[in-house]
Amino acid sequence: MGEADEQGHAGGRAAPVIDPGDPATRAVARSFGTVASVYGAARPGYPVEAVAWLVEDARRVLDLGAGTGKLTEALVQLDLDVVAVDPVEEMLDELEVRVPGVPRILGTAEDIPVEDASVDAVVAGQAWHWFQPERAVPEIARVLRPGGTLGLVWNSRDTSADWLREAGAIMHERHDASATFESYVRVGRRFGPIEEHRVEWVERMTRARFLDLVRSRSHWITAPPDEQRAVVAAIETLLDTHPDVAGADELAVPYVTRCFRTRRP
Image 1 (cartoon, rainbow, N blue to C red):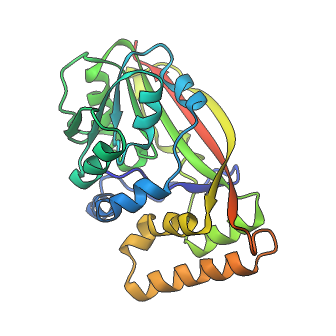
Image 2 (cartoon, helix red, strand yellow; image 1 turned 135 degrees about the horizontal axis):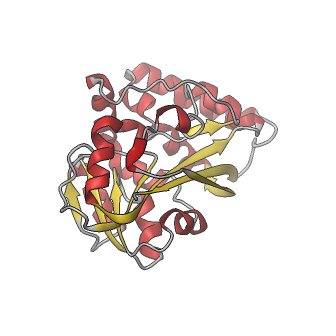
């Protein structure tokens, strides 16, 4: 599936709004395939520092729900042996363009097509809330070697910046996926205590790329054409008029990357 929408982050603890088992949710997840190239170009990657913390001493890593390979790229930069699994063929095609040579496998978190005890770490970027934990957790435990790591990571835009908070409202951001981690990541007795790590950073992007970021969101992808046009027009007006960004050739977009890891006994 495609990586999930990045959300605004203001440190709250909102209730989750995504039901991974709902057929409508699954359809939305697969909708990312229709904009795979835009997604790959617009979405930010992950700080290598964050990813290194996530995988610890692992050498063979499975990127689950790899999408277009945003997390895969960082894993490859760390010289790790990576396998990418995703249920959307178009996303894996884009991954091959961005990270050539990485083995790509069509599959889901609930039915991972790799052998038992075959990887040191399973990681998921912007993807966990598309999974059904009651089915995914046993599968992840199955493919991990004893002592292996499950690592989850989210990029969230830091909406303490006023213009980004306004942009989030226009884009219909409903919750912060990373802030609700404790509410819906149910790893149970198959894994040990959960550790957390945060990295704050800034991504610089052109106005055109920010607009593509808007177009890569599931709400925009699945909206009627008139609503799509209205959202883009409202964002363009915001970028033209907000005193923090009006006239800027380049936008500084602050992010918080939240990482969580836990080990299989």
